Image (cartoon, rainbow over all chains, first blue to last red; front, side, top):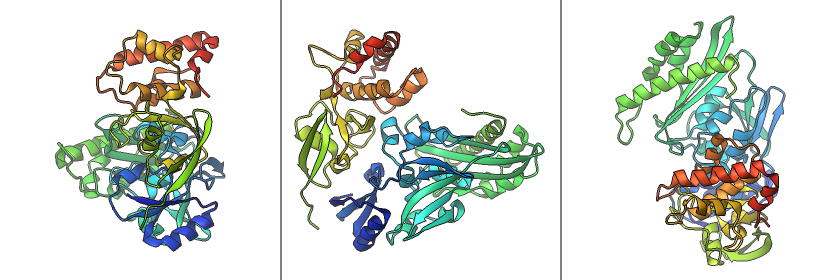
Amino acid sequence: MKLCEFVRPESLAQARASLRKLGPKGLPLAGGTALHFMPGKAPVTAVDLTGLKLSYIRQKGAFFEIGAATPLSDIQRYRGARWAMHEICRRISTHQIRNVSTIGGNVCRVFPWADLPVVLLAMNAKMVIYSGKMKEMGADEYFSSQPARLFRGGDLLAAVKIPVLKAHHGFGSVKAARNAAAFSMVTIAALLELKDGRIAAARVAAGSAIPFPKRLPSVEAALAGKEPSAEVFRAAAALAGNDAKWCKQEGMSADYIANLAEVSIVDALERAAQFASGRTK
Amino acid sequence: MKTHTCSVSFSINGEKKTFATRPDEKLLDLLRREGYKGTKYGCGQGTCGACTVIMDGRAVYACLLYAMQAEGRKVRTIESMGTYDKPAAIQVELVAAGAVQCGYCIPGIIMSATALMETEKDITDEVAKEYMDGNLCRCTGYEKIWVALRRTIDRAAAAPAQEASVKRGKK
């Protein structure tokens, strides 16, 4: 990506106005760590979003609100009531990248290996989008296809709202990668809502081994009404192939990835059940 | 579209400076052009950590950041650490442990270790490894680097007065 100019708006309104004026020649820039992976020789003007006070995490009622320019390391370090976002942020890339890369950058343009969209889908997060005024969009709609589609007109992601998990909620996420800093081979996240010892509702999402992150409705349906147990989790995970066509990866067949995904689903569900029992790490 | 010349102002090792740059110039290139050559060019894609500097107290890859992103920030390079005559504690321990082989990764290792020691209290192995996970040693001398880091941390914890020595060079 070739930058030919650098502008620093002082407000979201100014940033949006700049991006609207620049059209395809404008590039919203936060951490900028992903630009290395974005081809394109056409020169663009960077619109720096880091001065807009969008780096924060605060609890507002039933949600944690995370500013779009909040670095992943801040999310990793934050501890709120029944906070669950840290475990996946710890697994994203390296310390230096986590210090710069932002939640907004991770979810405004989704790369195939992105972990956070998987977690936000399972969490049923809400995206706060600035389009002259603030509007909210649920994760299912937001991640129905490449979110970059929403920002072509200069609109901007302002924040991400994560529901505060209650005592009967369990959450778990699992990332399978070759080493600590490598891109994900499979990422799975699961949110369980328990009632009277049974799973009242489940949201399970997958990413990395499929072209775009998505929920796994067959797995979710197989969990509903059942008691959380290893057998139930394994039976549900075996249905993941109904929802996702697992892709082969370098040195790994599609069958191997399918197997890895199933094991990861079971692990994520077990971590979710442990979370409901009080696991905090 | 023409690439404009522009300027960027930031604190470098405690000294506020303004540099001429271009919007597409990386912070690493600016630093090395301006004489801060202790910061190394390694992979150029945010993987190896040879270019690690500290920006506003956090370790970052200078090869990924644009120079313009440093506007108004506090940047520290390896030149802010100890000297040959008065090395910082981590530098003393790295030498004592025989951890410096080709030495190319060491400036980045020192900057990440400094960010760790200045940010965290009661540093566990898990936290230390987390801070160091973005620095590769092509000579694979990790064990001795780890020994040196752990000794520095443990000595600083045992003798709070020694902390000043760990931070020597901080401006």
